[in-house]
Length: 283
Image 1 (tube, rainbow, N blue to C red):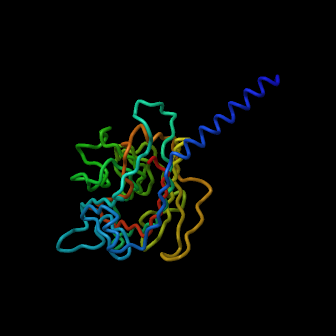
Image 2 (tube, rainbow, N blue to C red):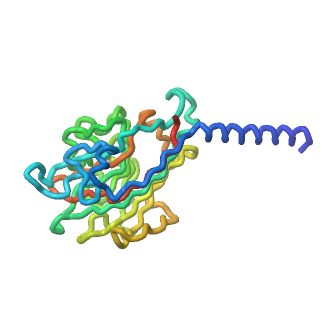
Image 3 (spheres, one colour):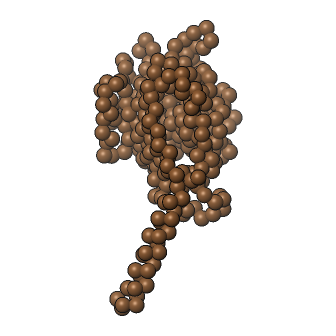
């Protein structure tokens, strides 16, 4: 390689590094650790009934039957009230441009009352708005309904933890990556990993969802936490499920983060006990 060529290559390298630094400087960072949860969190989260906050947890569907709610055929959402800007520029811009990155982890307890058959599921959700779709109980997990499922106008991406087998599901104990529909883009049975989302008796799981906005890559990890108030286990070295995914192709530029869940004729308690969220977003 000639000296002139080497010099030019060095200049290009330095310039690329400069552009990367400038791009990084454009991002703001939001980082919070939430939980145990109490009534003060109603000021922070949009809680779409029958979801509620009680017993130190986000109860994404009701945690007990009452005069107001049955446990069957419910859906709920709990979302952080602040939207985040996930990319800069307009949608026509190059899709190689930087997208916001995020890392989130949450501790869940999905409990089946009286050890009955559980159903239907809990999801981590990135959504276009704060509204719970009507009739989104059962298989729709609080994400969509029979009319809206599959519509590109939904502008949602979710990681589902599904406990009730539909015709399009691999089994009744799986994780899935959902884009605008509950018919998952990708699924993975959790049974071979010795994970049961809703076992007989209480069990606690930490779930990590990591998204790299440079590589456009989503990865999900799960590990059991032995005790509710015990130490957080280390994140596993290998993901349970992952996918190449450009969020810009599916989400609104300003989107909301949180949870949705549902029950059907089969029921379960969908509890989030702790939630950590870090987003590198555009101001």
